[in-house]
Image (cartoon, rainbow, N blue to C red; front, side, top):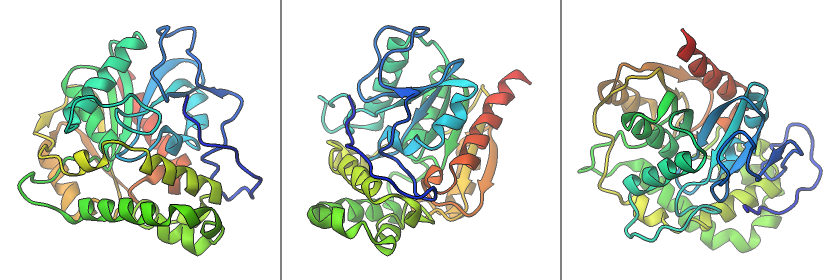
Length: 295
C-alpha cells in the first residue's frame, strides 16, 4: 500500500495530494484482474484508463484529476518501477525499457490487453512505448520525456538532479518551511506554475515520494531516447506552455518529428506537471483524447 500520511484542513484552493476520497481505493476492482499492482491508486467504474506519472513522482500527482476522469472511467494510476510504492527494480542500472516492461506486466495483471493510457513526462514516454507495443487504445502524452538527443545532455535533467539533491538536504525542515506559500512556489518551480496552491502536507508527500525513488540516478542518466514512432491509435501529444523541464522550444517541434500521426497540442499557462496547475483542463484533455477512439 502506498502510504503518504494524513492531511490537515486547508482552503479549497489548496491541492490535497495526500487526501484520498472514500471512493478512491487501493483494492482490486471486481471487473479487472485479481492482482492490483503495488502502489496503485484507483477510482470509478467503466472502461479502464491508465495514468502514468513522471520520474521521481507518485500516482498521487493525479489525485485532483482522477475524480473528474472517474465519472466515466475506471481510473488506475500506476506506481512506476523503482518508485515510491511501486515494485523494486532488481536490474540495475534501471532503464526506461525496464519501467515499460513493468507497466506492461501491470496491464497483464489487470487483465487488460489494451487500454486508454495517459502519462506525464516519463509517463508520457512510457505511454508512447506501450502504444509501440500495441497495448494502447488511445494515448495522451503530456510533456513526454525522451525527446532529446541521447548524445547531448540537456538542462532539464540537470534541473531534476538539482531538485533531488536540494530535497535531500532540506527534508528535515520541510514540514515547517512548507507552511510558506513562497517556499512551496519555489520548491515546485520546475513542475508547476502555481506551486503555492499545493498544501504543505502535500509538498512533504511529494518530497518523500521523490526521495523514495530508488532509480532516479539511473533514469536521469539513461542513454535511451524516444525513437521515431508512427502511432496507430489516436494519440495526442500535449505540451505545457510554461514547461521549464522540456521547454516548448525545441521539444514540441522535436515531438512532431518523432511521433508521427499524432495530434500535437499546447496547453497554455501550466508547468511541466500540468495536473498540479490545472487538473480540470488536464482531465478534459485526456477525455478528449479518449473520445477519439469512437470517431
